[in-house]
Image (tube, rainbow, N blue to C red):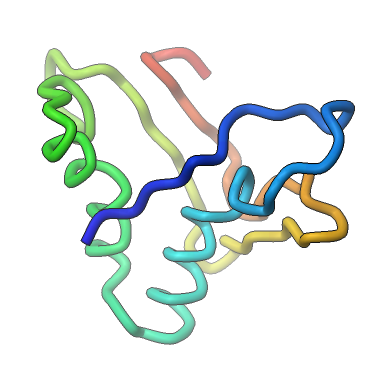
Length: 105
């Protein structure tokens, strides 16, 4: 099963958004994989990276390989935590110091 979210890009001045805009992927990895052990951390990461790319036919994304787009998230597993709440949704998760999209931080 792959992980996806219909959350988009939002700024705090945009007003209310659903917590999934900020917390979907950190919650799956930290809460369900690391904390509860319902699935392995590698499986949780794969379900959010290479598996969706494969299903959607994105042949140059989802894996760290030469010639692929450099879409990378560096996270500290022991610090990873989704912080968004329904009352305060514009909260970045903890434990993610760097994000790179298409080779740009």
